[in-house]
Length: 163
Image 1 (cartoon, rainbow, N blue to C red):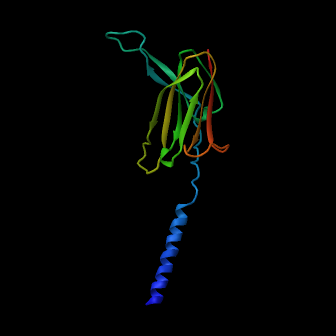
Image 2: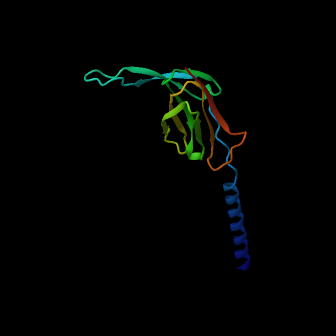
């Protein structure tokens, strides 16, 4: 009987060690999917003056994604543009974006995935307005917020020439 209990105890310890080892493997950052075209346009309603019966005029706002990383764009003063990047906060990874003083982020929205798969990623959109002329920058790093920034982190930078 003692031999049976000892063997059972050893088997339970072995099984527990295998399970614990599987839980302690370091996480790897998600793979960034292939990029799509650099800029697209989306209609944006703007209001210039109070109107009683007419609808507001529609302008277009350029949208930039991963393929615009490292590029320079031109935006007029008070002009707007959007940046949409893939993000999967279920893994702990998220974008930490910054802008220089001539740009202001007017919208910061995460859109969850259309998929019903657990852990599927979505997209993050930032709408940006140019408020000061000159060379400006929209940039960020994709990482887990509790981790130190390293040279291996995924980054995004867009130089903005505001005229």
